[in-house]
Length: 258
Image (cartoon, rainbow, N blue to C red; front, side, top):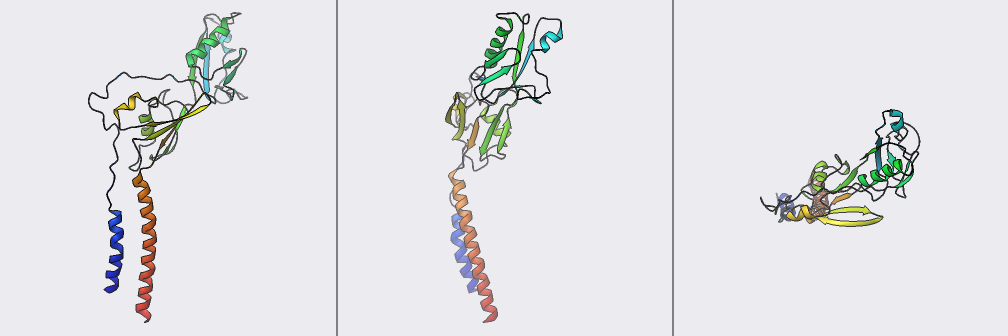
């Protein structure tokens, strides 16, 4: 009985330590009321980046399909341009090589701006196609979500637009140990890296330049101090538990062989 009382006295401080005051974790959009969240919906048009793969289709007023086909990539083939995808890879210099039309600098342009350049080269200085139409789509839009979410990794952007709330949802949501009021977004544009903080619990979220994500953004959800404290407590509990086990084993052996 004396041994049991001693072990209980040793375990009591650990129990009290594990039951310490827990910091409340803010909810999503916690400060939003029925009116504070209202406002215009702004959809940022994506700009082309290095390593993007673009689907580009050209059509014209010609009644002969072969007139358009020579300016369109096949869906299968060889080479760096569109193998297995039929897309144009934006290279390290920000350019694409277009068959029969030459080089276009695509990085930093919107789809409409690049389409306008292709149209111009199809009609000037020589009209290669009559009244051409150019349709451009992104083929490999993705972002990365890391940290305290249910499922870390690459997330494909549905359509060509995704918000940070949608990205977190696609990653399974933030865990109970994740900071919702200080989510980091790492973004690279024009060869420069920027890091922004987003408060998912504030009504100012919708005005943040990082609310609408861009392709290749990295969303990083950092752990709360409670997660760090819990990790330290787990290590301490494991060590003390091992110590108590050894003490118990020694005491039993002592009682058996004394």
